[in-house]
Length: 352
Image (cartoon, helix red, strand yellow):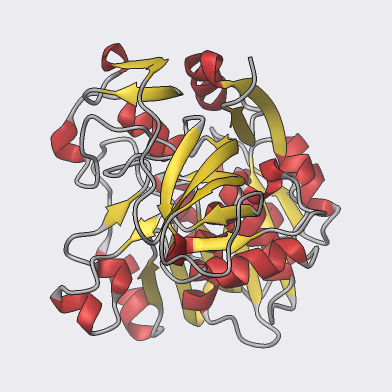
């Protein structure tokens, strides 16, 4: 079969090539991959040298953890699934036996497995998956929409951790894929209003269709979004969900948190920089009883993600901005990184 393979981290070690089809083990199915989405952060990390900075990665590996397709083969002891079923799969594979797993903290598994990182994933024509991780997708949901289930699941985890109370005001910083999904989920939560901040007018215009209030920011002047946000939320906000990982923006939003407010760090910091955290900021957290929350990935959130997608609560079609065959994977990766209009880039392994 055709697959994207990285022998080591770094583009020069990656290629689209022919490899043996996966063997279907007991309790597994083999999925014919119909669509696999590029996760910007994860796929770019494979493309960049420095394996020591990627604790989940193991090479050689077939990347791709956001996929959907059709069951092509069913292994022994698999019940409830048949050849031809339309499915997606949870990419996370906790070991089940470590200290954290035994206490129900599967996201903190000490031997965490992840399809597309340390187990072969979906940038291939076929992928083998444990049947316990499968979820059926209805006919009205396209494969490319279903391939976004993992991204939605991560956002579901964040919304759960945020514990949004009735009548609260939520600010989402960044209107990339995750920011748009989080904004849509926040609209369907207890929040009284949701406000999104970004530098791309087109992405903000899309969010306004979902009932999200928007603020256009300037990369060079934080006073622009501060003035607009103060007009929308003169008494402050209850929750900031930061998907951008940009320190000047993050620092500027802390002052808008109400007493008892929460700042959630959803996006990673990519640039290495010294953060000028002041004692005033720390004292504000202390005296105002504010909370700083970190969230990362997900486990056990696929059921809600599938329900939100299947039930039409999330509008995913407009988010799929670019489509490529597997042979053009590296071109697709560059588009995802460099094109400001790119939201979700999807790969179709079975297309020429």
